[in-house]
Structure formats: C-alpha cells, structure tokens
Image (tube, rainbow, N blue to C red):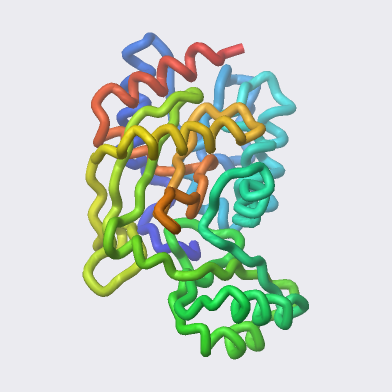
Length: 280
C-alpha cells in the first residue's frame, strides 16, 4: 500500500457509525472487501464505497469491479462514473471548466515540461506543491521552491504525470476547510490546521481537525460549487483553501472520503436515511 495504513481492511469510525445507523433503521449492513472475487453483488441491494484506501494502487482493477457491481442488481454509491472521474485529480481542470473556482493547477508530464515551466514562470509562483494525479491522504505530495521544478520534471518517468500548484499560504494561516455534503445538501463543516512547520492539513501528519463554521457568503459559494457538478452524489467532501479572498477547491473527494461523522451528531443517521431512500 502506497499510503501507509496499518490495516487497509479495518473499518474506521465513520464506517462503524454508518453501520450502526443503518441497523437502527432495520437494515442489515456488513463490510465487504471490494476485491473479494467470491462476492456475489446480486446478494446486496446497495453497495456504498467507503474505506477503500487501496484503490490508489489498484485503480484499474477497482474501477473494473465497480462496473461489475453496477452490472448486477446492486445499486452503487457513489456511482462508477463518479469514481472514474474522481480517481484522477485532473478532475480539478474539469471543475475549472464548469466554473468552479479551484486552487490554480497545471498538469505536467515529461512531454509537457517546457509548457509547464513557462506557465509557472508567467504566473510568478515561488513555492510549489506537487502531487500525483492518483493518490490519497497527501501521499507523495511535495512542497518545493520553484527553482527545483526543472530537476523534478527532468526526473519524471515516461508516462508519469504530476499536478503542479502554487502553495497557498492560507493553509498555514487560516487552515483548510472541509465541507461535507450528504444527498446534495450541506451537512457539516470542519477546519483542518497543519502541524507547526508542515503544510499538509491531515490528522495523520499531526494536523488538527475540528468542527467549525463558515460565513454565509462562503457557504453560498460552496453550495454553488456543488450545483455545478454534473453528477448525482450521495456524499462528497469539498476541501477548500482561500485564494485571493475566496474559497477555492483544493480537492473534491467523492470516492472514499473521511466524512468525519463522529464530529457532527446526526450526520451518520442522515447518510443512512439517504442510502435507504435510494434503494432500488
């Protein structure tokens, strides 16, 4: 596993809370390993993608399995189409095309080296964040000065791609905001703050994650972002940074995001109710 999780088959707090909420509604719920070849998906009414952390290392197999689930009588959420779109972080450029503000992003490869270097120089970015196009939990995400970019691009293996972004200083001063949507409606908001000396706003790197509130104008902006997404999402988490005074999407997580159901009383029940309502 590229991202170091001690047991990728273990359930997380989010999962246990959701199972309990479903059982409280009289629904039989169990965890199933997506890669298990012996599972007959016709035995299930609904499959909800949750802690499938290993999909980043087996993306093609994972997407093939999702297609097989949708070919059965089992309803899948979020859909295989959503997963195909969201698995590659190049979706950020789609968001930008749809009018959703994003943290400025360039897609780079060995073939695009000259164009990317020119675009970064033209934009005047001095501190950069580089990340793989497929990844989770900030794995292989690097912060570096712009002077190191030519070397990094020179070392790229043929066929490998990276996303290049400017470092948004607001991640250290204000923090990263996560807004969780359930069944198309905003559920709860969290503020993530990196550990001292770090830029990654993740608890696994020592950062803090706490429930918080955003001003009404910010919430209206995030609601408008969701409205521009051409998918029906059972759940989604917008990770946002303030850029030029307004919130912009750093990531939109719609495959296996931590939803922090334990930080928002009633949110597990909302998700369980939405799942039941979507049963075929």
